[in-house]
Image (cartoon, rainbow over all chains, first blue to last red; front, side, top):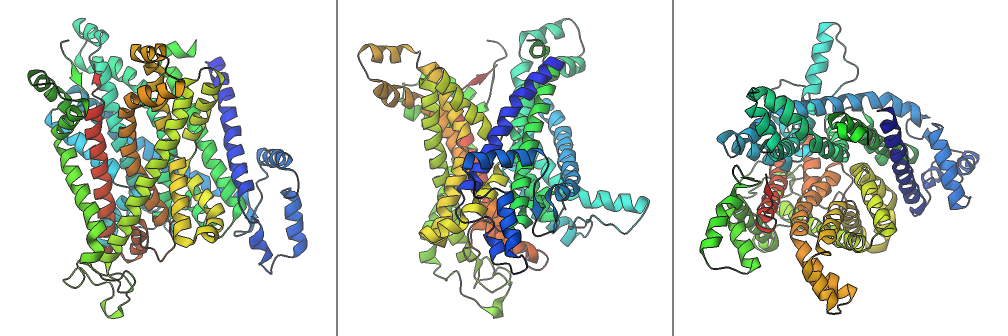
Length: 319
Length: 313
């Protein structure tokens, strides 16, 4: 397992480098001066601007600039946020737990919904349940997150008044009240993100289980007299999960896109809403850093998927 | 073959019929299969109606999109304003028609970009062995693991002003959004085309063509590509829906087209602050996006049954 993990890590490294190269080339190709905004800002003296230009190596040859930039990024020296007047890494560290919490819970919700529904639908293909589940899933992933978010706000906040539609980091209540408020404000964002993912995952699970359930070894397991429940859980689902893990990992970029939208709708103070506000404030260092963090997260989750893959499919780990 | 389960019910239903009757050309056969998928057939009608409404709408409903009428602010649907009005009293029906043109144009143009880039890269990777193939596939995988929305936002942030100066605000943003959305969606097409090429290039009919002295480019264009197109068309259909969602997302975040151009996503963005007093505003815009996307997705599903009748054991 350790060997396998190391190899996976080594494969992940070039893609991180590739992503950093793409980011850097974008920044370098961008017309105009990323620090042009500072020139028109009277609060920043010209010396500071010059120092920043030198620090970011704006006048060096491009390859040297890339290496300098990369080294700085690896050192955690991500620059200074012009808008928030705080180091970028500090800013991101403050924001990232909220994002991970929302995304993680939403993924959990998606799997909790998608696994049973997908498996049950595949056990009885073209039954009433399967057709309803398939149609609902189809509708679910055709509904963009920004629309479902607004719909939920309209129903549960505006009409019914049950749930707050602004996510607050500083809840004034304490004790149980605090937990209750905290859960209440997280319900809608997590539902929006989780159910959207659940819709596509249900389809993946259904088709993966359909692929597996007719194979000979399942018939063998049934013939040996193993209970249907055990056959499904131990024999079918475990093998069906292998392609599902790959597809879920491939979905990660979409998940982060959905997280940005959801954070923006519900004003969750995560790195997604940080990205949007940084773009609106022309805060280049923050934009670059957040994009890089998102890219790292995608690579990280792909790595995680590889590890789960190795655990699900013993043939892989030792090869 | 006891216990054969098809990926879709329509495939199963078609088989015996096709055997009983005369053989049709592949195109007609596909059309017959497509018609079997009732939701897909209905979706074609819905999408055609939408497209028609968007195309001839301005002639039937010639209300300007920016006519401000403060006496009719945020009014719900009425005979004067079938879809109601927004916070400046502008007619939502004509704004929706205008936005629909942009959304559909972006969707199809971005799909064309993605198909074009994906087909070329996939074809090159599929025809060449060794290093070229490996490098192209590595790039494809790299692009697949890029966080698309943050990068879209980054590219638009960095290049917005440049293109605005080059081709004007509307055209510049349109070109950029189409290129960027298409540029982040070619990977599945490239993989599909490569996989098709890898199997097709070893087939007898390709070998026969090669033995007759067909050049490599003729092999690709005349013999391999037409046979590889089925799954590509399906992927392209889904891409239209994805591009429409991507464009609406950008506009919804306030970072797509300029604020005075009412795309569907932009309408939702403006409407979200008035959810309590004017819910119709958000509902019409969101409903239009949803209807278009689900219709296109159903059509893609139907096309998959029609063009790619793969059985699932």
